[in-house]
Image 1 (spheres, helix red, strand yellow):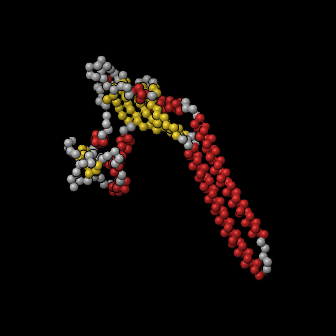
Image 2 (cartoon, one colour):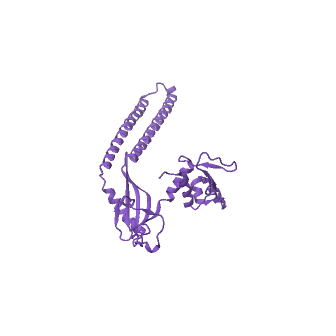
Image 3 (cartoon, helix red, strand yellow):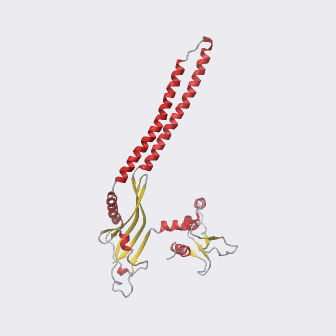
Length: 310
């Protein structure tokens, strides 16, 4: 099936309960969007802050959208062209992604099929990305399902589910099995399995990343420590040289000694500042390396679906 921005955008606005103003056959799609959708699509944080601080009721935004560059809109409306690369379409995709992480589907059977009156059992499907992060990142897609009647878990559940025809059309309530496991309990069971799944990975990637981190930190410490040692030696030498200088006559003694003390303090301060700066850079570089190389696991669910199947 070819992706259509026209079809997708219209379905999006219908799903978020927007008011469709334009006629179905119109080349320009006009829609009045709800406040929560407005905040996601128009990016006017200061406007909303101002309106909410005054306790005023905002005026819903009306968008006029065209999907064909050949459309010539009237002069009295501000019409936007929606393409795959447009900012507005990008905002719509992000909004749909945030709002559409949870769905509900039902196994479909033709009306005359013997299974069309079968009881559909509830399953919870979660698709997620498991990322092994260090100096290099490995992403693994992990799909986990659970039968909400008996708690049985299924790994790679999505691969099994996608083989069956599914529909968004609700069957009669009498055909839907009732969960005996709460949503929170199901999530806890799935989290335990997910932890087991992560421990099954060969931890060589983490060991290698830790070795790389230690090596990188060693190089940073060697580089900065050599410079710090030179500065510290320079500071000591200057101080010793100034201590060895003696005044040659009583008439100039006070003036020369005061000048030497001023020079010494100024040079000392410059070197000390340079040492402090190098120590700061050293700590910052080491923190950056630790952040980059420290092995860690991040799990990002990207979709969650309730599926009713035989």
